[in-house]
Length: 447
Image (cartoon, rainbow, N blue to C red):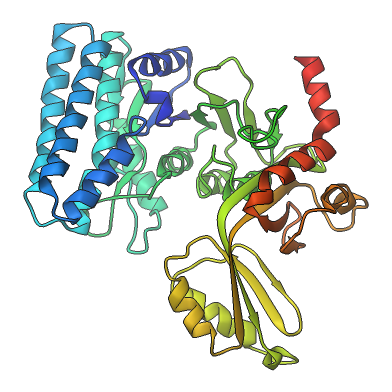
């Protein structure tokens, strides 16, 4: 059994639905296909939720109706048979009515979860109807029958494994279709794994069925060595270790959700990143047997804020940093980077929703400085501290770039530093030239 997950752009149009179906047909193994909502739909559902929360029902209904018209248009173009289109209309009417019903009630957090679930439910239903027209034997499974989270939002892996095995046993087919992102919570209510959660769904499902491989299909050729939006002559990385992939995903590589590979890593299931629009490309394989390579790839994470706490009370004191961390824990704000000296602590966050409260509490510990509009540059690879020449190749080219913080030594797979966002593109290009020029030439020759 393998798991194939397709993101929003992969099912963003009629043409793309057909590309996905072709990939599914070409895969001869038993498989579970995990789909996201169609491209743009999740953002529309977020907008509808915001309008309903603000009691702007009339504008919300306009968006609900427009979304339904979009679905009907897609179904009409996708499904050639009258029977298939008739079935689609029944399904779409049901989901349209769900959204309209929610708009008539007092809008609650639970109503928002119901609204957000509709995107994946519609895309999987349309895809299943299309496979039926192709005479491909498949079964549509509701993720709400087997995906569960606890009161902390963490997946209940044992329950997922038990439930999905029972659901699969009810069907005698080799292809299963299900939704990413959505699940049920402790109260058995509709919930979700947060934005980007379809990758996480695929990984959890792969672990639950002991899949031989998990494939994540997007719109680029695997994980690139640098950000192709800002850097020319990037190339797809052939393989990564799980640790390298985790660092890159967390620090800005958009192709992969940061949490998604954890279940796969724990179950030692290889993850293959592929391009829906260039299925012939090799993509990137993430596995535990990746060959050692000094520098593998670079990623950048924007919208970073740095906080510096300076206090001479830190000098020779114990428990000081613990108290600082407790402030962030109290406000449920995670820390990306941290550096310390005898009298100061500098750290970064990407969630500034509680910045005012955090800085107010930190005033009790010393002088506080806050800098914003910063970016973290993450360099991933085999960066073991006992190897010579690793850092010199990185910093020689950056002698004219002001570096706000450096984090090195916490992991053998990551060196990160903080720069002004206005310097980010220059830094990415300098590093690309210094670290990957020879590799890029080799890739070009091979191509």
